[in-house]
Amino acid sequence: MAGARRAAAIVAIRLGLLAVLLAGWEAVGREGGGYFLPPFTLTLAHFWALLADGSIGSALATSNLALLIGFPLAAVAGIPIGLAFGRRRLLDRSLSYWLDLMLVIPMIAVVPAIIVALGLNLSARVAVVVLFALPVLGMNARAAVRIIDERLAEMARSFGAGPVAVWTEVIFPAAMPTLFVGLRQGLGRAISGMVVVELTLVPAGIGGLIVTYRSRFAAADLYAVTLAILLEGLLLMSLAQLVEGRLGRRPAGA
Amino acid sequence: MLELVRRAPQPFTLAAAVALWEVLARVLHPPWLPSASAVAAAWWQLATTGQFAELGSSARTLAIGLVVVFLAGGALALAVSLSSILDEALSPYFNAALSIPTIALVPAFILLWGLSDVTRVATVVSFALVPLVIQWAVAARSLPADLLEMARSFDASPARRLASVALPASAPVLITGVRIAVVQGIKGVVSAEILIGVIGIGKLLQVAILTFDLARLYAVIVTLLVATFAVYLTLERAERRASRRTSAP
Image 1 (cartoon, each protein chain N blue to C red):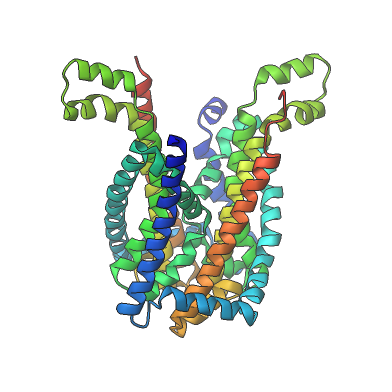
Image 2: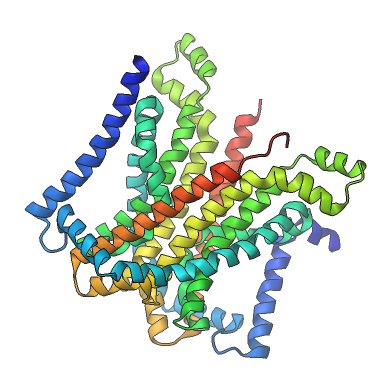
């Protein structure tokens, strides 16, 4: 009974907060929002219109091309770097601060230098996605293999396992959960990177749409497109959480 | 010498990276990469002509934003740690806030509040608030109940219990939260200024881009990166010191 009341309270708070937020947006938009804050319902109407005429779809397709190329590239480059740092102490102490640095700095400030080097094109967008995602992929891979129980590796070796077998049978299985955490966080940062480069200098895809609507002061369209990006982020990250829950578990006995 | 390199290799690899940059830029002469020495010269010029004063406005806005973040974040973290119902009810919102590309909100903020400080403060808050709440809620939940109980039985006042038991015990996790919030706040203020384009670091970058002054562009970027990393390392050191003190008997 108490459990049911508790669950009801939780649902009530969740839905109540959502209702308050949306009703507040609607009310402010109708009363005093003026031109720059259209009410929620109007934004939603524009969202459907842009979805129906294909603007959002084609922009999302353009944007996600950079993500589709950049994220796997970042994983292929970042994870081995992190693995090497995690297993080689001297290398780690000498160079892993670069990953720290890349993780901490506002990467958006580096975008102009990337554009100067690569131009206003797809390769620059891919490069920015890679730069955003790589450090977190590397750091998680590093953490994943640092925490491995050395005694397990030692035991495998004394039972005649070669270096390859130690990696495939001991290190990777134990590292899996943390590697998947890295992939999820990396995906989140890759999406940010995709948006950042389009908002700053390469007016393409969904960020390009935002820049266009902003310069036209088309407020409802701008909010609608922003909503589309946020929804994509939510969707992809929920998917990543699902995959992480399925595949990122420590196998039994490891 | 070799032993010194082995013990503290970072300064040496950093120096090697800068040397490599200088050599590459001088030998290959890529049109997009100014040499390290040219960047240093441009930096000196920026510094001596007082251009970095522009960053004062960024720092001030960041400070205002962080005060808002710490006050609101502290209240939220406390509420969430006191009520498990509230905690569970809000968790999908926090999860969603961490999943969305926050930067996508900035154009909407610019449309709403224009070039005023509100735009930048709102960006700082949107970048830093939820990560701080999550970290500080961990700190509030992990308070040592036994020690607090003992302090109470020795008639310590609530203020005394907070100052002598609660704060020292949770200091490392609290400082971790501060570090995360400050780093996120810097990302927020820089993002806002770059998208606005006419204030603070955004103005410095914009001027360098429009005049095709690559050395200057790199000088601004490097300054920003070094400053951010220095802040991060300082907070990380404070965190380590606090956790050493906590774990000491």
